[in-house]
Length: 141
Image (cartoon, rainbow, N blue to C red; front, side, top):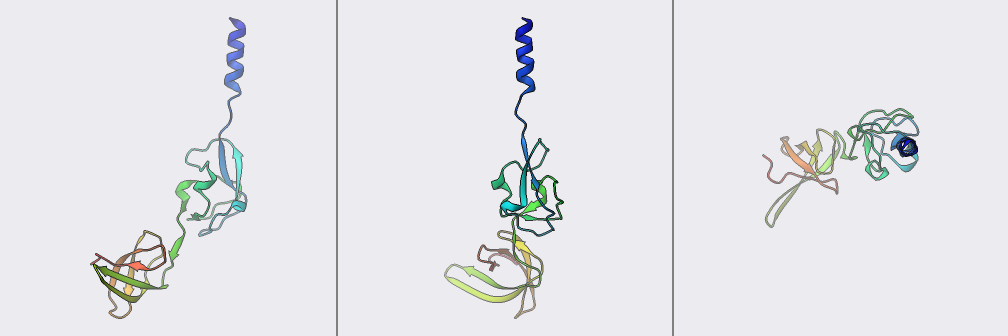
């Protein structure tokens, strides 16, 4: 019986440690993460990324210092539209498509709702950033 308890204690103490992704260098805000920017460290940090695929291609929201865990809440999709950038506004209704030039009032990633100034009418509308960096204003008022 004593030998069984000893074996159980040995097995319980040799459990594999979880791995956490940490920054291999200081990553300034708005850095797109690549494979060279991350390192795997032993240990389990709540909220930190554990899979490389979860962080590759993401953008840092704030500076992440070397050796610090990569928290998923500190990462976002990379912005396709920057503030004050010129962009094409597209309005579609059935077969009708209207395009106009606009200026983004804020930055946004694909799928984000952003405010944009229509340069011809000087009105501010809201639109959704598309993967091709155009802004769809269909349905906005």
